[in-house]
Image 1: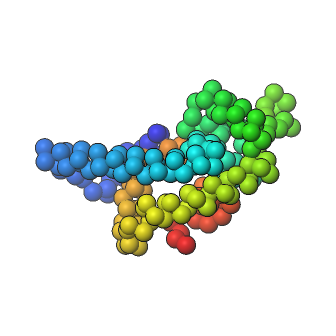
Image 2: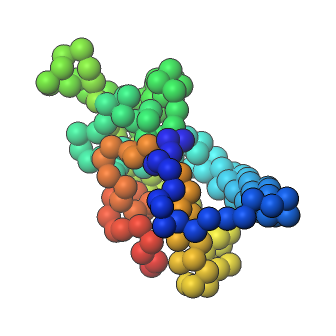
Amino acid sequence: MACEGPLPRDAPRRRSGRSARARGLAVWERFLEAYSAVSRELERDLSAHGLTANDYAVLLRLRRAGPRGLRPAELARAVLLTRSGLTRLVDRLATAGLVERAECPEDLRGSYVRLTAAGRTALRRAYRTQRRRIDELFVVRLDEAELNALGALLDRLPRSEPAPGGRGAADGRGEGSRGRRS
């Protein structure tokens, strides 16, 4: 993860006492446990659609990027995979007919990866399941104030590199804005 720089001067400073560090570690471990449990459930649901979490992330990023698609290096950065890992994943998705490679007109040595109609359909079907399960496993367990507070807290933590093609909503259509609840 690329850190967005040091804390601003006006950021609240925390005591670094032993009990604060111990509590911080306990909260971190609980965060990892929750993330792992929810991720396992979502991964199991995706497997019913013949997809992995990485497959879904690639399809979603390509949908957000629009009809042109993304260059492989951009896509690898966006989904936090190595270029070789992404190449293998794209090969598998292309064999399944979910993505295609297209020549890059401005650089004949380069290419774009873009969704096919079958890829859009697979993403739409998987998204319905993902949305329902995210609601069940996460959203309904927190009230609006808690979701807002958690969002604000997470906004203070480092982020991965911004993805080309915009952020969009995680709905597979590239619409909406972060933090909007339906």
